[in-house]
Length: 201
Image (cartoon, helix red, strand yellow):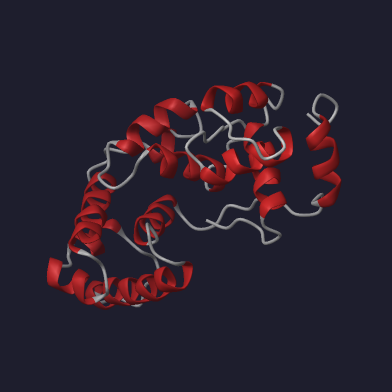
């Protein structure tokens, strides 16, 4: 990729030591992404901590594992009491229902292609294409995802390839052609070029 792309040739040595790392299980990762939508990182962490405490208290056991069945056991007032909006409470319940009913094929994901997984995930309320793509990059560590709806990616392409001029999705896609089959990796380096802190999900 660095051979074919002058920008990547400069960026990769700057951040060469840092790496993406997957954390937690699929259900927890997606639940976290729903909790964090449209609120600050600090607020999201506070709501997340209260939500986890409510789930674990409701499950009655010493487990620290966030189980879909334990989320389904909570009523809406309890979820709202953890600081969740009515809509996010609905989304988390729908997520838990999908996992509990086996409507997402977690065990098969390694064999499935990116688009098939995105299709399963966007069927869950509160998960759009962007969230599904972030999940592919950060949780499943898929190397060739190009999240064209990501503001940071578009901004990074604009600054690094077009001297700050506005960039269309078609232009961004074209730039990304040179990155295949490592579009996720290039996206991550562009994020780092905008913000020295590692992107975390």
